[in-house]
Image (cartoon, rainbow, N blue to C red; front, top):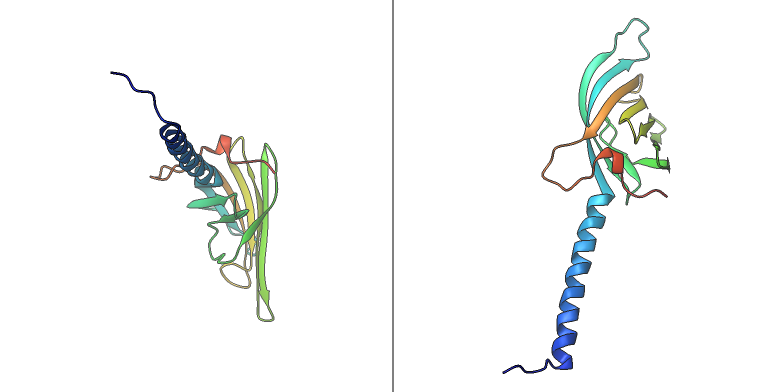
Length: 154
């Protein structure tokens, strides 16, 4: 025999469905908040005039919630995202004291995956390094998004 559901049962069912939807939305927001990029290219010492570019493999993490970029050799300070649109992400960060100066600045092309960046004072005070990279979304167990769909646009 069929018995009608009570209002409390119906409300409980809706609450359960709503809470699961919130959990799913938070997981999607977290995935869209960070992107791991596997990069390949060259780094060139701009202080030594006769230096040739050297091949390099590196990972870059773009964190949209923190508005930062990490992964550059020796940069143990925040590298802030300064602007972002549908096609480019620009970033810049520095750390200084009376005896120390270091900076990272550059951009990521969201369509092609090309990264152009320069580090100044990293890994040593008397260094200037330029990176020319081609990056793709990294193959990781984390739910990162492909570079062509990098996070929100502010």
